[in-house]
Amino acid sequence: MCGIVGYVGKRPVVDLLLKGLGQLEYRGYDSTGIAVERSGEKKIEILKSEGKLENVARLAKELDQAAKGATCGMGHTRWATHGKPTTQNAHPHRTGHVVLVHNGIIENYAEIKREMASKGYHPVSETDSELFGFLVLEEMKAGKKLRPAVTASFRRITGSCSVVVMSDLEPGTVVGIRNGTPMVAATDPKGGGILASDAQPLLDLTKDVIFLEDGVGVEITEAGLKFFEFANDAEVRPATTHLDWNAENMEKGGYPTFMRKEIFEQPTAIVDTLNATLDRAKTEAFPLAKHRASDLLLAAEEIVFVACGTSWHAALLGKYWIEKYARIPVAVELASEFRYRDPVLKPKTLVIGITQSGETADTLAVLKDMKKRGVPTAAITNVRGSSISREADGTFFTAAGPEVGVASTKAFMAQLVTLLCFAGARSKVGPQAAGIDPKVSKKLFEHTLALPHAIQTFLGDEQGLAKQVKAIAKALDDAKGFFFIGRGYSFPMALEGALKLKELAYVYAEGYAAGELKHGPIAMIEEGMVVVVLAPKDSWRDKTVSNLEEVKARGAKIVSVGEAGDTHLRSLSDHWIPLPHLEDEALLPFAMAPVVQLLSYEIALLKGTNIDKPRNLAKSVTVE
Image (cartoon, rainbow, N blue to C red; front, side):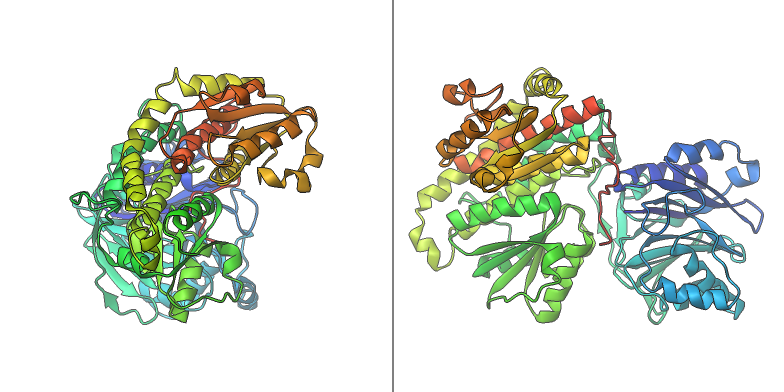
């Protein structure tokens, strides 16, 4: 959600903060601001505005030399939870000499607000964040220095959040605490240090970073970093993580948007994730790299996936693959529902949380609850050092690289290939392996290794699939709404296609199992509606085509996605997108993914929406 950057050192901080916040824009925000300590003065200056970061950048151009010369400061992009997205509610907030930014929710804010009002403090914003500043102010009035005042105040609040605080009375100091929402810090080789909500703003300075655990804070001065536990203020020495991300990966590379770039990076994401997941030195089929997570996977007798949104769709496909090839039971649960149930789990069940960012609040909460119950857990995530990778008993890291577009594409593809590898690896172990023909696993593995080249060829260049989808999108610009339907492997892709269209273009779109149309949804079919039919030549193709004929008879426009040689399907369609021939029907979702992504992208482009940063959405959902 919200993005935070804080810095103390020798570099000019205004430009550093603005650039860092720009690298966090993908998290989603509606207002922004920076606070800088004026050079040579015990005074912190705040610039903030509703709307986009460029509003604050314009204000920064008017700063005088004392502010432009600042080397200590912090910045924030806000995604509203308490109070409208206005300049008044934007961060940073000042309470007396205390200035702060905050990510997350203070759940007991009403209680604190009543207490502070009784002491004569009156917030000027509608946020819960400002109340934390009053707590720090009270502690410092009682004689505490900034760091112990912040820790004492943090112990007063409940909820998943992080705060970063400065004070006019302690120049050259930034204090941050993480509890639930992410925070990463690093030493600046030139002196001082930096912290942020994600690692991207740190990469220009260093690739050696420290992901703070829950309950850990950091104090940054020009002398460097000091880490401590806020529960008792005891100093700790957390481990350093070396990131192999390249800051250049965060640039668009000639593409008009990050999302388009990331769609075309999907073949590379498949290759890199295969290399990360498998022991490529071995020649056997699906040889998982040996580590704690793979040991847990191979020992499990039942698997429960918990996830949200696009990751949940990936998990649904994982269920199809694992049950088909590994013959073990798989359940797929929405994390936001599972965490509030009282589920019954059999012995030797492995709970696997899937989250691109590794910070998804509901998924993370499930794994924490499972740990309390003594249930083994694993995670699939794209971010090393993320919260879920530290919470889970073991982690599989996808290798999609930084994904900036809020609507996931290449990270989703990397999750799919990881789950396919699970199915292949589990097909060789356990009592069920006796019933699986090893030749099946070997063939699937060979076809999987050929998959990146097949998808690369299918995507081609801007004159291939993309051009065709663009023309279809233009013809559908006046559609009343969209239904995506499919069976088998195509059903989760229908859900994903509808979600992408809602996320990007803000139009009515629903995904359904094709067999469910007659159980209610077909009442919505009329002229002006578009039905996107995912009907590749697989085990379910004929049944799906019969559903197509039902909606066509009721006046809907048909966009069919099927195998290139399926002339019958093409003849039934108003618009037609041929898929490449893949040797195994289990791999068809990898070809359907870029189709539904590009279709949603092109429709959104015609609607004029902000494709990389859709309204009301955030890349990392760190609150419920």
